[in-house]
Image 1 (cartoon, rainbow, N blue to C red):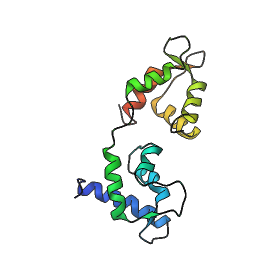
Image 2 (cartoon, helix red, strand yellow; image 1 turned 90 degrees about the vertical axis):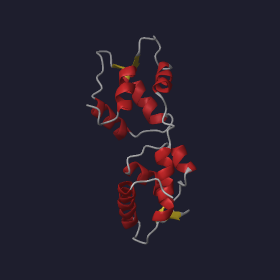
Image 3 (cartoon, one colour; image 1 turned 120 degrees about the vertical axis):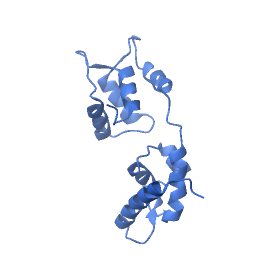
Image 4 (cartoon, helix red, strand yellow; image 1 turned 180 degrees about the vertical axis):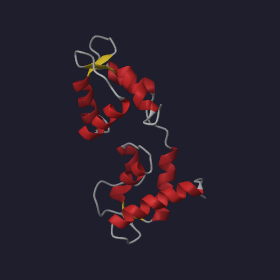
Length: 157
């Protein structure tokens, strides 16, 4: 039995129906869109988590009915492996040559667009805009401040 609230189920249904509409209104949504549906529902799973929970890379491999997608959403929503503040600090320290807590903004952009779950340039631009990240005169940013703001989420006041 699902542990989701009625509102959560309605939200999942709304997103599923929207993707079904784009997919031909046959009651099925291609499994290649699993990650996109989860993102639309406010989750932020890694590609590994998406693949582990029924996502596929190629269109046409399989598809899901709403009743099959609901448990996928529920499982991913419970996932807590998002990385910790210490994990991110340790990763950015690797690029801090002088140990002063700074990384060049160009290098930060490169890291975000080419390592791990790669972000697009547009996604990086959105993050920088949302957290109001400022460079110093030499083009460097404090990565501790960056991590703190990103982990606080977009709705932190």
